[in-house]
Structures are given as C-alpha cells and as structure tokens.
Length: 313
Image (cartoon, rainbow, N blue to C red; front, side, top):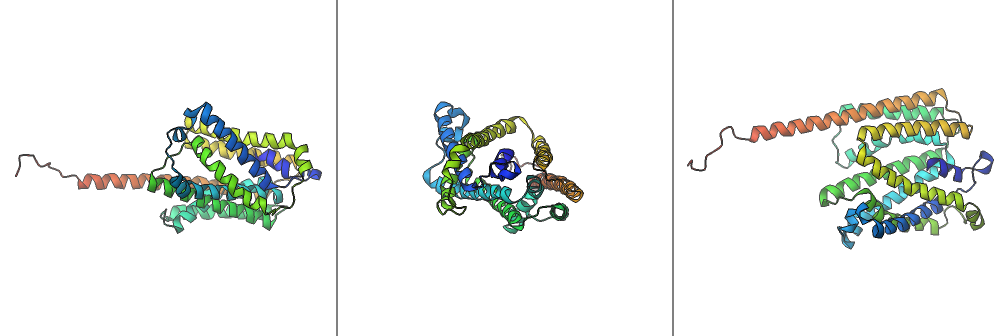
C-alpha cells in the first residue's frame, strides 16, 4: 500500500503518477471501505460479530467511536501527505519512534507511570531518529512536521481508544471497527477536501489513473482483512518482527527505485532506534510482570491464614 500510494503522489519525472492529492485518495479509500464493509455485513455477518449483535447505539457511537474515527482520519491524511515531501525510507525511520510518542503522551495524561528504563529507551530511539534526520539527503521540515503531527494524533487516538474501552467496556473486533470508523473518517476527510486545501482536483487525470486508484483502495481494504487474519494466528512478537521486516524492505526497495540512497548515518541511526525500541518493549514487559507479581503478593497477604468457620463465634 505504501508503495502504491507513493507511486501515485510522486512526480512523473521521478517515475510516479504526479497526483499529489492526498485527501482525495483517503476519501476514495474510506468510500470503498464503507461499501465493502456493508457488503460483508449482509453476506458474512460472522466476520463482524459486534455489528451483528447491535452492540453500538447511536449515543455510544457519537461518544466513543466518533472521536477515535476523527483522530484516525487526521492521522491517515497527514501521514500520507508526508510522502509527498519526504522519502519513504526516511518516513519509516521516523515511524520507529511511534511507540515512544504514545508512551510520552500517555504519561502526560496519566495513563502510564514514567520509569527510568523506559525513559532511557526513549532517549535512545529519539537519538536514532535525530541521526537519521541528519543523514537524510532531501530533508524537508514541512514533511517531517506532517509525519510527527500524524504520529502525535495517532498516539492520542490510541490513548482515547484505550480509555474508552476500559471505562465503557466496548470491545470491537477489527472488521466491526472498520465498519464504524470508515464512515466517520469519510465525513471527517470531507472537510479538508471541500476546502480544497490541495487545490482543484484534475478530474481528467482521476479518470486516467482510475486503475491505479482502484488498486490502491483494494489493497488498503485487503490490508485490513490480512491484519485481521494475521492477528488471530500470530503472536505480538511475530507481528512486531514482520513490521521491522516490512520497514527494511520498504526502505531498500524505494531507495533503489527512486534513486534515493540511504546514507551511513541514516542506517546507523535506524539501527539505534530499533535497539531502543527493543529495550523499550522489554522494559514494558518487565514492568507488566512486576505489577502482576506485586498484585499477587498483595492478594496473598490479604488472605487470612486461618479461615473462620461458619460455626465459629
């Protein structure tokens, strides 16, 4: 999907399609997602049990789902807009700090407790991203700002989603989530699209590129289905490992196709970021184990040694 979208946005002189209209593409993606999820709802309702059971009321949708959908729309539009200004490889390197930004925002709002080990890991990740930025040959501050803003919005979305789930007990499977979030994203994306923030859409070019645009939307929807199936059969560790492999393949293939070499400083910085990410995940796992062990110790201490008999006065 990243490959196809970058191909759509890239100038013709660079081997792309020369169609840098991000809001239109995201609007097209969400429109087809709405169509396909409604088809699945009536043909295979077992794939979206939350929708089939009518768990979400209108009030629940407006209070719990709409804010998450709006954040998702903002994150998608801004992160894809970054591809217009900076290289795919550099974006993947910047994205390695996503978990650290999520953690920092969670600490600020009181969802997480700061610990030294996690803080040191975050410092290592940020150092790697800074090195990758210094080594970027075509650094663009606007594109970098778009990607960082998109990452912050994604962090807010994840934290809000976690808070809503824990406070209201809403559990949406992946396909049901897409069924509810897609129309919200569609409406939210209509705002910048109607304001023509990217200029007038060349509709003649839309028709000329309709096979590529259709392929992009189909790949986007297939990605959701693939993730749904993958998460059912793979562990979180496997998912993380495949994510790193995906990033490496994207960085290598796009740097060759667009003749945008990865410098030694960038490679070293990306390696440092991956090391920091691994240490960060390890620190989170250790904190979770310690918290669970402490909870068990408290439960054991609160249990009386001798249970009082029912006949004992």
